[in-house]
Each structure stands twice: as structure tokens, then as C-alpha cells.
Length: 158
Image (tube, rainbow, N blue to C red; front, top):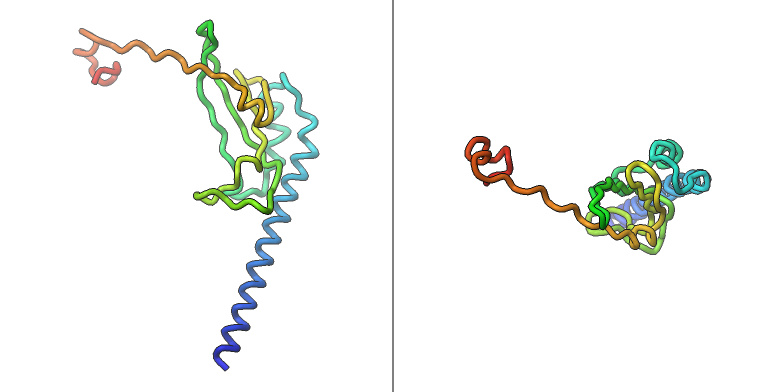
């Protein structure tokens, strides 16, 4: 009798887990559908504010472990001009055959990157990101001498 109760409980647990997975999949699929409806309205050269205003609302409903946070860094052209590069990722796919990474996050190919250079959309998609050649800016010269004696670590002296 006890084994029957355990088996019935196990079946109920499996049913609950399956329903939860189906609910999550439907919620993510709704986000992807909203993204796909809005993405064609975004064009290269659009200002970041416009793109974010169009695409950010499409991602409503995703949990913290279902997103990929934005990244930002400074790059430098060959001529030495500094640029701010920002990359925003939007959930654009759900691959049922792929497992989350070791931290529980979805794989990168579930997202589409949007690349902004100094606040202007300059690329979309993984090929654009892969072809981005970013030269790291030259480090600032380190302080020496009297400035270090007077201001120490504040001036970058260690």
C-alpha cells in the first residue's frame, strides 16, 4: 500500500513539473513573439534610446536567469579615438534541445546582440559581434614622483 501511495505521489510530482516546464516555455515563447514583431522596426543608425524603447518591453516577463545582461566597454580606433561600445541582448529564440549553462542561464544563441557605438546602433546579430575589431585603449600613464609622494594610491601609485 505504501509503495502505491509513493508511486501516485511521484506521478503527481512529474505532472506538476511537466506543467511548470510547459508554462515556462509558453511564457518565453510569448516574449520571443513580441520581440519578433518589434525587431523589424529597428534599423542600423537608430539611436540607442529608440531601440531600447522598442525592444525592452518585448522582454517583460523573463526571469533573471532567462536573460543575458548588457555589456559595455571602451574601445579605440586605429587613430586613437575612444568609443563606448554597448551590447544589449534580446531573447529571440528558445532551443528545446539545449540545456542551460553551468550557472543555469540559457545558451547565447537564444539571444540576438544589438551593438551600439557611442549611442548609435552599429550592428545586430552574432556575426556583427564576431566581426567587431576592438582595440583596447592605451592605459593612462602612471603617476610618479611628487604626485605619488603627496597623493599615493589616489593617483594610481602603489
